[in-house]
Image (cartoon, rainbow, N blue to C red; front, side):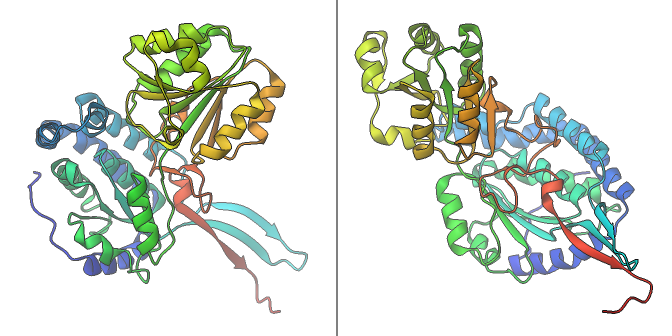
Length: 418
């Protein structure tokens, strides 16, 4: 039975325990990891009513604070989401083994065998905002990759985070070592956590720009940032109307409060259906902030004029910037200046335009004739994600279990000496 208890251990105690546990986790059998994951899926379903009840407290409290609808949507847990979390745990359990796998093997002429073996990173600290389902995603991936995890979630989801953590604890007890997954609740404890580099191997901040900057400035261990997603879609002159409307609508409207939602739409001046697209977006209650060229042509439709700063903004809402260009080169130049290395997309049938777009942009995911919403661990076959890395080292894009490992050399001889 889940008991609603407070988490009271101090960061130093938590980090020390995690370090000890991380060495035990590396030696576990794959069957144990997968059993823990499948039991977590079971416990999520069994505790559905309690999870929904605790989440309602967070939701109503945030609603009273007049949090905007897109951010309330990120906070909300539904029966469907609980089932998705459970299925993710099962998918991760059924995925190929990561820990201990030999990824390359070379035998020298003298018989010395040199292998590279996947091992866990060790102890991972994760600090995130909103989206309480991250508790389950991160825990499941840590279990599969053999890492110890310490997490601190946002205060707006405190009841949800706590109940999900307790579900994880119940699911893995007697299967994995005590302290495999640990939780901190106080914001004041984060600063202390970030200087414990002798125990913590990696910290992952997942949230707004202010959170990422704070962690980068204070952390004494490596940081993989899961930074803001200022995503762009470029509509080339030859883009089919039906495809363009479908992709843009999905990329902006399906979940405007998430990091892979499109924030700026760039349109070639010869695209013939610009007016129809504007009308379609306005019908979906999207606020359109457009450049001077588009404003002069379509101001009577209800668009507003953009400011230069608007193109640096991650809206996370039903707000979309629009800009007109005369070439794919113009679109790429705009993205190079404003992008955040997250997700960039092109809608076109022209192979040369697509190739130019691919070869001149640096982003963790480039989508061609598809929605930006596909840059997601679940959609890309990882089962779930710790977040979407925009750091390039040690991972780029959605981080699954494989991205939470590194490789070491194992050298096997029969009395070889140098």
